[in-house]
Image (cartoon, rainbow, N blue to C red):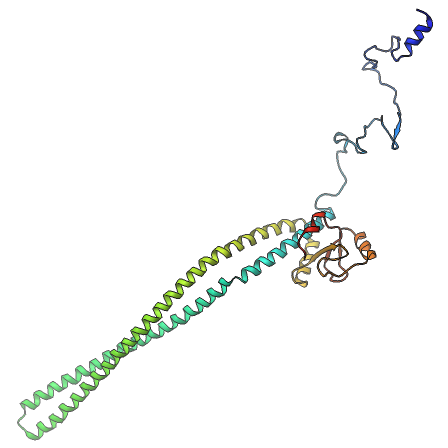
Length: 320
């Protein structure tokens, strides 16, 4: 083998020096290869101390502590939470309105008003009955007393032998007879009145029973429909508390004041080129200025809180 042949073999990448190992052309573990700058791709070395994957370090190379904003400090998250809170409040407004406008509530109130009216009438009838019973006893007592006096006078007449005395006693007998007859007549009238009282009381009692049945049925139906609405209200209320907890106290307080001032709608978003609440249009310059203030601003027209960067799914959400 000539010297040129050896030189040719040594240039293939497998040197015959004792300081290099022949294990697949790799240096031994105690020797580090010289750093290669390598070819440049898009201004980034392909061979570096920190490998690059799509322009970002891998998970193991991320810093141990991120200085970025937390969830509650992220304005975009607050804007989404604010709009979610507004949507929840709007649903609560609708649910409470439906609950208040349920026809059952009006029917129940009407039924109870009629029930009170009938019960008052029955109470009056009961009072008439008591008075009627008292009058019946009174006239019965008067009749009994007149009859008793008449019997006594009759006995005196039979025992008397004096004509004048007998004549006077006869007139007295007739007087007590008239009193007894009058009392009997009044007693009969009171019995007739009692029959009318019984008839009216029976009618009122039947009406009362029917009204109470209708009320019970309406209440039961109201419990079913109203109960479903109340359950939905409770669920939305819980959801509202969740979204409200994601907002800073100052922002939540500002939103609550806007809700009161603006009839239940305290927040909106830029929808195309206008406010989603008041529908007033914005110029391109106004939109740029609003968005330059961050994810939350104030509508220059209606002065509601305004989300300047609504999320993509909000494009299809309910219009305020």
